[in-house]
Image (cartoon, rainbow, N blue to C red; front, side, top):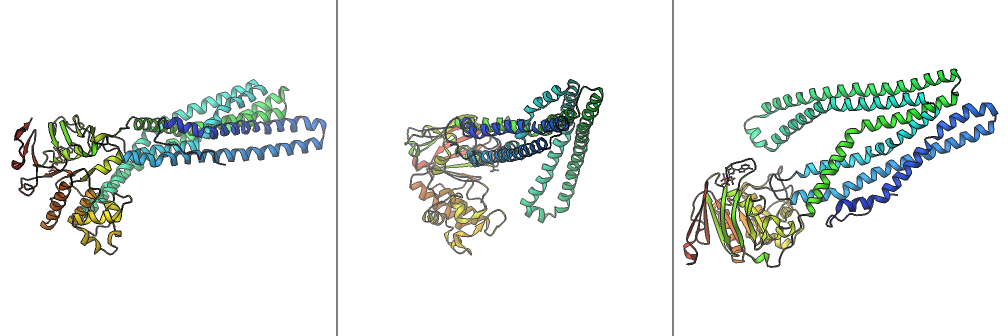
Length: 570
Ligand SMILES: Nc1ncnc2c1ncn2[C@@H]1O[C@H](COP(=O)(O)OP(=O)(O)OP(=O)(O)O)[C@@H](O)[C@H]1O
């Protein structure tokens, strides 16, 4: 039955148009079903007119039986069509989420700028709002276009009854708009307070060591209670206003029905309407009013659904613009940092100014600088996590920031300052949560000197680790992160303060791994907070970061007479 099975290729251009095209048969079926369904809604009023007005005159039981059977068949057909139509809307919503969910997770996670795009969760929330609209509310907006037809039916029976129905429809729209504007602000405030309260708990759970060590539970729970109280107050205010307007709308519907019958019977007494026509007008007016009422009730869902659609469509367009072709020479080209300047959004001071250097394959650059001098910022810029304000970071001719995610995965290895492991097994963590050759994983673990530790774990490489299951020491976790950074033998390896908090054995392992990769042709950047002679023997270049200046020097043994030994960049 599903007409929403076609797959949309997210790699091709015009993804949105493709999705509309793939949905077109389903949409046509929904529209055709809606036409038949709403025409069938006229059967009951027609039945009443005939049964009340014609059957008593003819006194024909056969006609009554025949009309009743036809009306029942029409009702059964209407219910079946309505069921199929609702199911199709549900499938359409599911299809949209299935088609694009994974794509937005992939795109959001592979968009490597820190704080520059909307979060993956925001995109998924938008997708889910769009699905909710399609699966639950779109049917109401398809039906509301039929309201004028029912109104016209009432008007044909009697213009006065038509005017009463029209007035009720206007009033319900006005009440709906008032309800929306009266509840918008408390709803927004309530959502904000709820998110803040949730954040307090989530944060405290993550930082359980600090919470436990400082016995912060009572302070945090008091703060949570305060924030939750604000959320509950706002929600109660929104609920009270919502209930008031819902009751007013429901009451208005009852008044309309009574009004149509009261005025209709009065018209009957005047001799201008039959009783059958009065009840038919009551039913037609009821349908028209209910369609408008239901559409008004799902106004927020329409607005959220449309906003989500526009935002997702813009993101899909953006994705189409980002295709980059990579020259085959790129992997073996030099790393070029060219006039690189960077400041964080909202900051006036530049962390790095017009920094230029070149790192050939097989060269090691040691970056030294005190706290806040920009070591982490430079590391993030080099691996494409931050976008330069001015200048470029390139591998050959291609900006690192523009490398397609799969190419970047192959070419770049990164050990961040703070170790981040994922919930999963050790083997999965080293393989970046994907599939990988086990021999490569073991080779990387040996190179990072963590193999012996891993084989002694209860389930070896298949031992689960993660945020909550801390079974490894900080230095062991760092060596697993190092194994992850080097297991693909990256062309460019960036290690941000790798020696911090490591014992001598781990530091030696780190240096041995760096030497081996360097010998194999990787360009390597290592940052350190204090000057140390540790890397002197194998380093090719040194960069000293100091607030607004940076000094670049070449290791004495590697000085090329054509290159100045010391450069100062302001
Ligand atoms: N997300 C951010 N937004 C705004 N400013 C930031 C951000 N991250 C870092 N900074 C600022 O940029 C400067 C450089 O920070 P960075 O973390 O690169 O220094 P660092 O040399 O790695 O320091 P540390 O050795 O303490 O880790 C600092 O002044 C810091 O306050």
